[in-house]
Image 1 (cartoon, rainbow, N blue to C red):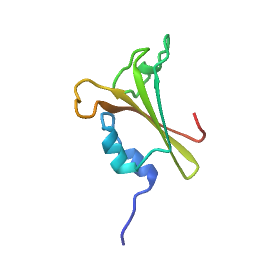
Image 2 (cartoon, rainbow, N blue to C red):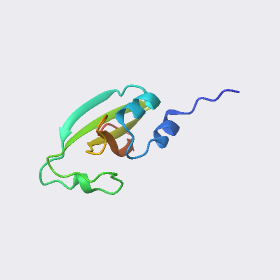
Image 3 (cartoon, helix red, strand yellow):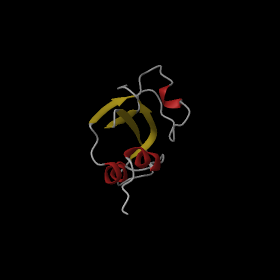
Image 4 (cartoon, rainbow, N blue to C red):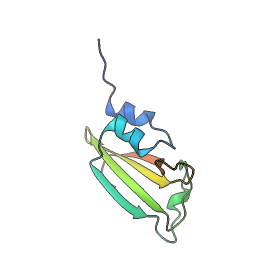
Length: 99
């Protein structure tokens, strides 16, 4: 019997440091993409679970996926060591509504 892993299981496989390409290969295209920056005066980039600490003013990419009434968010940091694809997963979250 061939088993297709659930979207939730696939998201669970994603680790901090994954490239945008790796995420696209596993999950397909996000429903929404937003480029923004960490707000000035914010501790957003220092929250627990961040793979790469981010400073206010740093650029951040947010990808949102929706599956089965749940919203999955991935945030990417621009990391200097990864030249071919510098955007790397730094944080992921699941929510029951849009953030």
